[in-house]
Image (cartoon, rainbow, N blue to C red; front, side, top):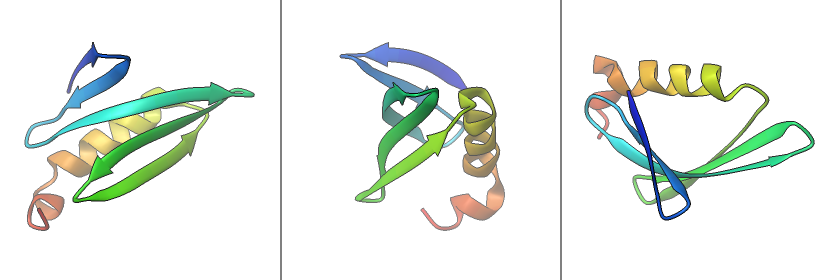
Amino acid sequence: MKVSSRKNKWVFEFDTISIVCGITKVNNIYTVLFELNDKIIKINTSDLDKTFLSLEESFNSNTISNYR
């Protein structure tokens, strides 16, 4: 996974997909927003590292790539 920032957004590049996220924090809870297949995905988490490692595992798996 590669991480960069562009125009106040975070860009996460996995093996087969890149997502552009908005990340906000309120009361130690992060909200991650991104678009995937024309749908807005919203994830609330207290641990960004674990969340993005889980997303990386999912996006890089053979199973999920069959649905793109």
